[in-house]
Image 1 (spheres, one colour):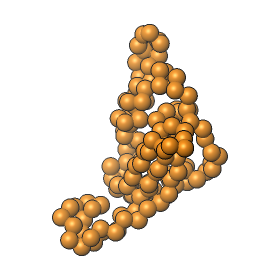
Image 2: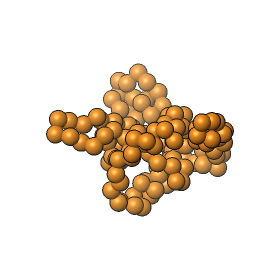
Image 3: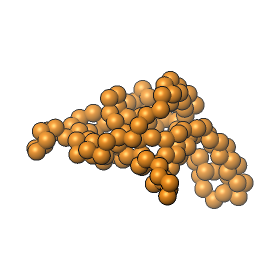
Image 4: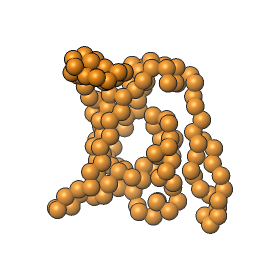
Length: 137
């Protein structure tokens, strides 16, 4: 991505990740297979990131990044530990929506569940996400 140097840390990693036309024009099936391969190539359990990473790594990048993965070497600071599985969503025949939520559609994607902090006896701070790949975007 493209980033700028900003004091006081002299580096600020908020980046704009440029589009990748070769990737974007792929079918959702190809993207899904590629992402699942990345997700399953290493099953080592990670640990929760240190809170000080929030001071040196922009969490905004995670929200604004249009890519389907984080760049190599970047730490997942928010909800850094979780589990991912494939999901199949069957849409009701009377759905008023279009696209992946169109009536009668069967959409396949991923669901990720994790906690923002280490689990404690009194509970967790849950974070869940659902991702559906799209063709041609």
